[in-house]
Length: 519
Image (cartoon, rainbow, N blue to C red):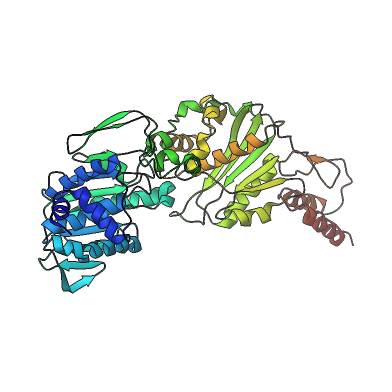
């Protein structure tokens, strides 16, 4: 490498990153886009200690990991070989992959010709290598435990996977680790630097959480510019980004963009536009669910049951939810709800009770957890039971029906004992502790959109030729001749007939009892 090239790599972080990319990718060049100049300026400030808390939000496949998590540590060690760098990611495999690239840069011939930093021969493992000056890189998964590890620089690269976008438990877990463990690892909190580099997956992901705290500077660059904006670059130039302009116009065409827009979880606005606020906030309020008097419900309305099954019972597991909707034209009355953290037998019993009481036109069950087992246990000849598998995120499923909710077309009973829990979940969705009630609501609204005119289910005929209104059967009195023991037999008959789902066995038992009495 000639002197001019060496001087450029030594004094310009972006030139350094482009050289490193070429050496690790068999001579392939890194396309220089204006946003890379902007990013290089921020990372240079991190390396010098001017910027101590930095959040970078970029869409996938835009080089954020390579430039930030690979090149920044190599650059820091070039000038501060005693610096200790802690690298964290959602998994050990990814953390080690990044650390391996850093180590390969330090071992590259061009790096050795340009800088004096060397890797110590006795400590050169991928996940824990040191320089001869006592610095080095330690790579750990975010769940791997950092007790006993100190650092001057902490780089957190994608602390969550995309699939974690709807997991409140996982989002909270990472934020808890960030506060209680990760931020305590700086040897000198006043001088040490922390960088979070990730694409957004939820409004309350780690990047969103850190943004709410003081002292953090952020650089957020959407995939497509939502409006025109001017950025000042380190060399004094101005990058004028036009509305609708891609970050990498050379890498994506219209078909690629259409495919990315169709992304289900966590959605294009969040993952590519770095704007989870627009994607997540439905801004639903309690007033959007009008109250109705329980007497409003008429037995002649068609009913639909929506079930969101839990995984299993116990207070540490998700709730199972059964919602019963009466369809009154274009208004949907949530006339009954059951919600418990119970094992399967109690869940099945609660379902059967509502099938008997409300005689629904259809039952819609999510095909997760205890759902598949329930389907086989409640099948009836004239009952439509549908299994559904959600395709969109929780937020997007409900967003499709936001207009219906804002119009007040979903109503709840004014005296329901579960009303407050339901409305509390409404206003906190999707960031509350649970989303099961909203999931069941979305499921019903999806079904009714495809089946807008459900019919009432026919009353069930009983064995005596009478008809049941869907409630447990009752013995009807009629004139009869009294015989010895008849009162006791009648009492036994009533108890047996009032037990739901047992009619065939009841009539057989009655016949046997009568024969024993009057032999």
